[in-house]
Image (cartoon, rainbow, N blue to C red; front, side, top):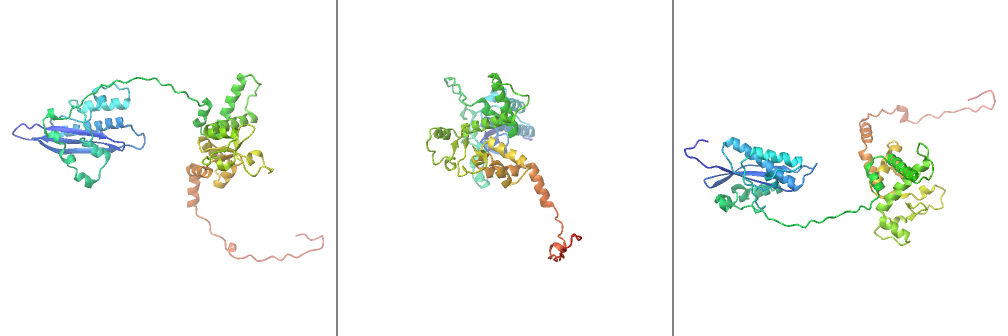
Amino acid sequence: MQTFEMIKIELHGFADASEKAYAAVVYIKYDEQINIVAAKSKVNPMKNRKTLPNLELCAAHLLSKLIHRIIITIKQRAKVYTINLCWIENNKSKDKFIRTRVNDIKDLIPSAKWNHVVSKENLADIASRGISPNELQMQKLWWNGPDWLRASEDKWPQSTSEKTTCAVTGVSKINKDHPLDSLTEKYSSFQKLIRIFAYVLRFKNKLQKLKFYPQYLTSRELKAAEIEIIKRHQHKEFENELEKLLKKANLKQNSKLANLYPFIDSEGVLRLGGRLKNSNISCEQKHPAIINKSHLAWLIVMDAHNKTLHGGNQLMEATIRRKYWVINLKRGVKKCIRHCVKCIRNDKKLRNKKWEIYLRCEFHSLHLLHIPVSTTPDHYL
């Protein structure tokens, strides 16, 4: 830039962020004229979504990189006025995300001065919230900048630090959940979950010195562990219904179990009622245990899918309903098959398979064979 007089050039940047995106815009000021130089915006990523303070820091980082490129281009000093972040002034954060970006900002524009601007006068707020091209053309604030920017620096809006006194209160949270309830969410195999519960129950009984146990788990222990898992699930999902059934009261009409005629058996398991009481099938098939839509229901569906050798919808539903009545079972079965990698691969192979041509004899009727009847014992057919 070749001029006969020294021209004072100032760069003014604005940065802002919303839940959708963050943006930065830079203006150049000389001889009381203000023009937009550059602007850039980025969308908040769907994965690893950041909080609003982190997005504002990303906007400041984006602004610093934008101004740094402009400074290299025009080779002049610049003054920057944008959102005030305490992280930039006091870089004492232990968070690696904050610390690295604050260091980059100070390295890119070390002589920058940071101030806070309200959202109505922050030009980057327009880009961060999103605007159509037709509306952007009518935005005079975007193209010409705020009016106070043309005035002297002492008339610009200043950041005021307010001191507030806060009362510190200690709060303690009492967790009513049993430690065994969290085990269900940690495992992706129903059989493995049953074995872990069986070992936990064995350890509990050993502490009470009830009896001697063999080296391996027995079928009774596995059955007791399965019942314990179901009971804990039902106490967590159907707490109100269990209380009313124990009091022999009627369930509410909006309850999930209102149309299932549930009852509690001798082991404390909530089971499905119905008209199969006098049938010859087993008790589990007549009155399956009720399971709500949860992670445990997903484990049961996955276990049935593996036991049926990646069977279809009807086969899986019939297998599960021999022991459990899972709420919204059809939807869970369809989801299981849809997300199974082996089923997806086999389905693609069947679609791409070239079927063989039928034989001629399969289309036309076969001739009848006349077999003679022999009454003597010497002839056999």
